[in-house]
Image (tube, rainbow, N blue to C red; front, side):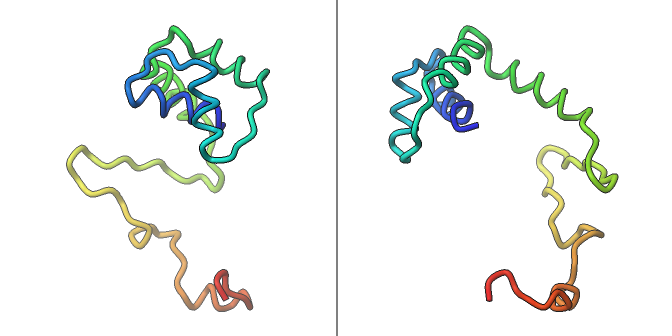
Length: 106
């Protein structure tokens, strides 16, 4: 995932064909050790492809993946506010968290 994210980050700033050196520079800057075989695989799969098309195809594939609990995907209309966690019917109250016997940040 680090390799793909770095590739996309480099493409986002205008490098339409990130190289191994470009990706290593990004990953080294945050202390991530690079596996050359995996990095070369990512670059060979993504180079010469339109990143927007790859993302669109990926989103289409993810749409067919079933979600746990039968949840429904809700997308906000352009220009409107996205749904918040407090508007979710599955959002738990503070009282129900207290029943667990511990707090996440205690």
